[in-house]
Image (cartoon, rainbow, N blue to C red; front, side, top):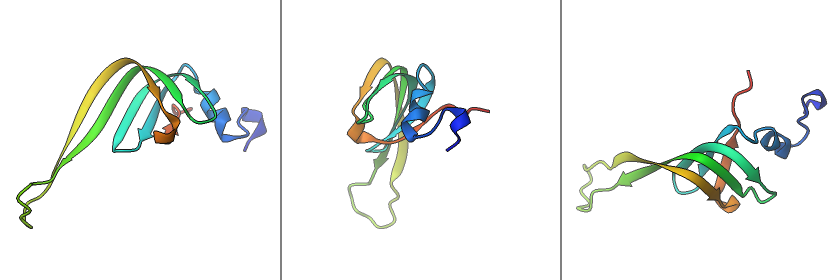
Length: 97
């Protein structure tokens, strides 16, 4: 990694994203976006101004082969959220263009 950018290991990218909006993909078809306030080595995160998106797949109960599952999205907003690190799949920092 480029030493002049201040990024030499993956946690440096997270550190540089403090107080900025990040996108976090979680287990269980959940995604959150919020302002990163704190993190630790287990990838536990504290976020504020959070929007959570959950993908819900409804499979028809009758089991008919022609029946297609329906996919919907549920969204909710929270002032503050603690994300446990073992559920984190991906953390995307803001674009730096």
